[in-house]
Amino acid sequence: MSAASALLEAAGVTRRFGGLTAVDGVDLVLRPGSVHGLIGPNGAGKTTFLNLIAGVLPPNAGRFALAGAEITALRDHQRARLGIRRTFQNLKLFPEMTAIENVAIGMHADTRAGIFAALFRTPAQRREEAMIAERAAAALAFVGLSSQARTPAGTLAYGHRRLLEIARAIACAPRVVLLDEPAAGLNETEAAGLVELIARIRDSGTAVILVEHHMDVVMTVCDEVTVLNYGRRLAHGTPAEIQADPQVIEAYLGRDTAEPEAEAAAC
Amino acid sequence: MNASRRDWTIAFAGIGFAALLPFLAPDGFVMHLMTSVAIAAMLALGLQMLLGVSGQLSIGQAAFFGLGAYGAALMTKEAGLPFLLALPLAGVIGGIASLAMVPITRLRGPYLAVATLGFSIMVYLVLKNEEWATGGSYGLIGIPRPELFGFRLRDPMLWYWFCAAVAALTYVGMLLLQTSRFGRALHAVRQNEDAARASGLRVTLLKSQCFVISAVVSGMAGALFAHHLRYLNPNDFTFWKSIEILIMVVIGGVGSLAGAVLGAAVVVVLPELLRVVGDYRMLVFGAMLVAVMLVGEGGLAGIIGGLWRRAAALLRRPRPALRSAAE
Image (tube, rainbow over all chains, first blue to last red; front, side, top):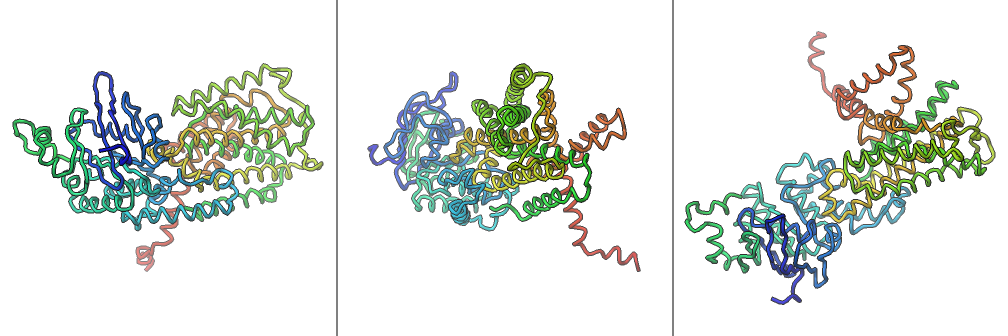
């Protein structure tokens, strides 16, 4: 696997919290147009790794590159501006704003109108607002939330809030979107809808890194899977390879197999 | 994503009312009081932008108010600049002073509040001790009457209209800002900073811009204040003034522009109305503050909005119960 074919590359990324090494020399290559699953038992370092990719935390060692360009030193909002967007495991919406306004925030970095333009409602500002409204509406339609456009995000149903976070993250057609347990709390029907949505995001040209406990979702939609355990990369391969990997099975089920699939099914 | 029709209706109804007020009560003292309300409204709007929109608590707004007031007074009195030039320049002074606050916009909640307080204490000491410029504790006297294109605003009614117009422009400007890409971003920063950053928003820049806007408005309010009383004393720009501004915003309703104006009117007018209770007036005033807060965190704007909705619901509902009772 050469770096040239990588859209996003993490090399030897390490992050320590005090004495604990949460992420330990992890490599990951995200290919353009693919969905890359990131799985592992609880506490394996998945969310920490996602935060490192997003730039919320600086790594202690290792580097990140986006389409070959070094981004290790960039902070979260700078990486977001370069097209790395994310959702949060514990939904982080703007609760008092309507759904469509939440999505409009996702397009803020790609638009320009400032204070002067706002005060004088310049023609450029009006055009831009119309464009934002149109594309935000399109993003809501993409995730199937058109009917909720004017609903305050704080009053949306739980499943809808998850979809709204995705709409906000993809509204600007980013290069990479990081989805942090998007299936958490969804029922089977909703999870199936999510699989289909993630596939459509990939087909629209946005590569996906998916942290997920819900194994059906991961195995159905991912092109590649990286397994973390105790902060290290335990395995990497196609879903079929991962499912057959004895190390992975052991990490998930334990040597004694006393509690079959407890972790995997707990999601 | 545009301002709701309701917001604009309230704005223009309020502006219309403010414009007609001199005809309803053509009285010198009422005009003086209403001019004070217009100035206070600008201060409250400035803090509303900061606290209600971007979520930053400042208890040092008096600093920008004082710098604008003294700056404008010295410009017209000592440098002989026209008032109409001193007014925006006072805003510039406030804005430049607020740039000193840019490093502290990284702070949150009580830490930010105390930092703004520290800044306002420093400004107060400068105003009090730099006697060569400010007149120190004796105050600054002999501020000329405001002039517009060589025409003196001697008539309190004209002066009121001028101040009310500046306040109205401030209000409309803030409504336009709030309903723009910029305002949306500030609302987002207040509601979830992590998500704002993850969407590529430059949170520190946005907060700083908001601080500057707030300070510009407060500085301009200072220029109006200086030429309203035509006498300045450092004691008008203490911690208490900042707290008064905070009371206006909270009583009116955090987040509501109309509430900020309403709060300003209450804080300026109520103590005057309460003179009938003599020595107890500030006690009664304090009790009323507690009462409004007990009714709801939405302040007066929240209370009025709630009553309005209830009244509208009552009007819409058919009343068979009443009809049967009548039979």
